[in-house]
Length: 344
Image (cartoon, rainbow, N blue to C red; front, side, top):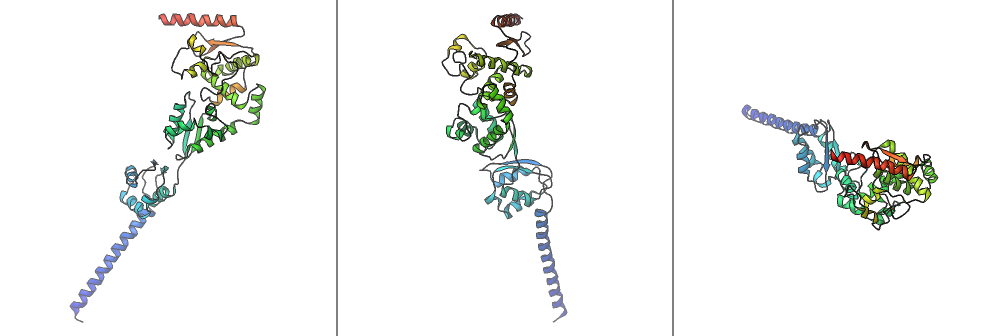
């Protein structure tokens, strides 16, 4: 073979080796980039809905990803478009493209903190849960009126508020309304210890009745120092067979749409009207916090108070009385202060 021919062949072999090396090196770099090298430059909460496309996820992550092409390639290699699961994911600084892809495919969710607030309306409760979870507010609202679903946990549409204890709960963003209710029932059961059940019985109350009365106390005051005394007033009335005459129950009947309770409102024919029906209403009138239930379980009944009204200082506190004449005196003082305030 001529020398020139050998040179040509050698150059071809060298070229092929270089090309193979380049291709192999490129693939090796791609594999390393996708599987071993950190790609997330900072952490980010990612919410993936059932109809979220992989392209939308890539776009959402663009601001925290150092090498977008690596993540797009990993999405393709791991078939994210086929296997992606809805959920709340925490993409953390240092995550690789492959890990992010596997996380989405396998549904490795990071829990969210569901905060249950103390609210007065079922619509407000439904909206609050919907704003924090994947479930929509219409589904929550319907569940709060669903006898069969609530019955699984020992509640009814009338007593649904009692199922919820204001607190923060760790859950998965995609949890169903059934799972949300089950978590609340678990918290309810944990709250009602043997000691608390015993305290309720000493007041002649069931767990549900304690929650109902707590909702009335919640409707009356946001002044913690008054909770036990207000609870004591209503328990003293219950024990004496007196009607509760609790204005918050009338406000509940009016869907909390008025700031003033009129005399005509006291005649509304409803089991929630505690002016014309003795005893407790059939269900709570809001979602009472644990502090209100504790006030009912540890009331100030020994003072013998049967009446109370707002204090004339307008600081949110109340004046308490044992007799109706004493109560009228307190009420007149408040009305006088109210009139003077209106003239200013």
